[in-house]
Image 1 (cartoon, rainbow, N blue to C red):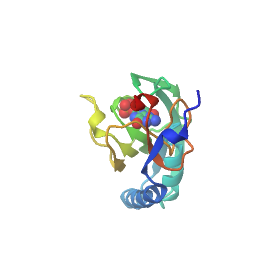
Image 2 (image 1 turned 30 degrees about the vertical axis):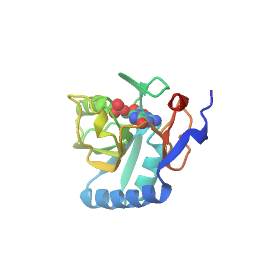
Image 3 (image 1 turned 90 degrees about the vertical axis):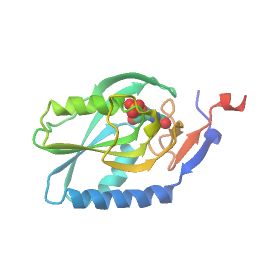
Length: 183
Ligand code: 5GP
């Protein structure tokens, strides 16, 4: 079933997202000055964030993608992370910046950090548009290096984040209110 956009209420509007990405891009450009930077977008949710963030970065970057799946299409994480598509190029000796849409339990990041550590990059850092620190599971990374916005423990959609594959194209971040909330 196609979910209704009427159930989405704005949490972070587009001007705020744009302003914050400009700040993050400036910070990343400063911190990676003179170094080789490889941005790794985690498909599919990171696509809008990655495409805006890379254009806010002034140092030379390379871009690659990796796809993982942890949500079975609904609002609850299955807790099991699966590699769906691997990188196209080796990252040995590279400064890698993982670009995520949201960090919730931290299980996806823990999995990715583990996968990457075996490939001997020069460094690994994490940029996420959204952080839900209340969702963190024990033993998972607490703090991404670059955070767009810290948000409450609500299910959000838009700006890359989906519900059953829909809503990724909404140009802002909103809270999805499921029909059960009406009861
Ligand atoms: P984690 O492994 O940290 O629990 O979650 C990471 C992934 O779960 C994200 O990349 C995203 O795909 C999904 N996720 C976590 N929280 C939300 C949310 O509030 N909304 C949506 N649409 N996806 C989420």
